[in-house]
Length: 330
Image 1 (cartoon, rainbow, N blue to C red):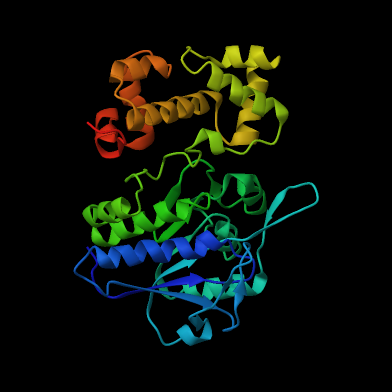
Image 2 (cartoon, helix red, strand yellow):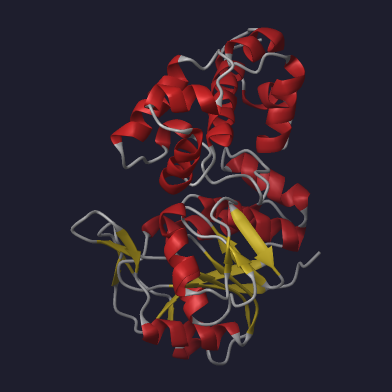
């Protein structure tokens, strides 16, 4: 367990995603509060100059230090956030500035570990830091990352991936999961659990859990997918199959699987299970229904199937989840 002072540098640049920058500092701040090692983490925002940086949200952020100003300091962790631009066809493209890539490569050479958040993985890849490694990124740019960097084994599904001293995180809010994982690696699971409770987050979402955690918030780009999503919601209590969905959409099973993979980055079976788990979570939080009744209402069929799905997706049991998150009085 590491408890000595650790300098964490978050790379700052124009059009960066705001949550990528502000999320991790809050998590590490809570870690300081939850441990006797009050000085365990120092988080700084570093940029090319001390001028305000305009984030994608339009909020201006002031750097704490320039990249050159870090020359004499020992760095423990470098976190590289991401930025994107959207073209006229509403396609998302990561922003990768060559000058920033050089700076990240220089910082990585003198740090214990380096991590990316969301599309920041494209910057790490451009710096050569992901060659020969598995990596994840936001699902919307995963195919582009794989195409641009064939030496990287891109996996669009996990929330985060650790490969040696290099960590990559998925969609924007996964910066919190990644930060918790770094804290667990440094200070132990107990501290990370206390921080997660302060954040009202569920710990722990395992690294292998899909970044598509809340089906109603998943982004679809075709009317067919939207119709299929509503069909699943309407028939959630039924034993849905790939063949049934394909028949509803008037396409083959293979076409259905390809559409789900391309549009949602997952399989029909995994998507259906995620919707069932989401419905079960809502009922566990807000009703007194028995586990058997919830299993039936959400289409799991048996309590055993419900338990296995919760263990697979949330690394817990329905009983434990209800104990922690129920909102109705006992």
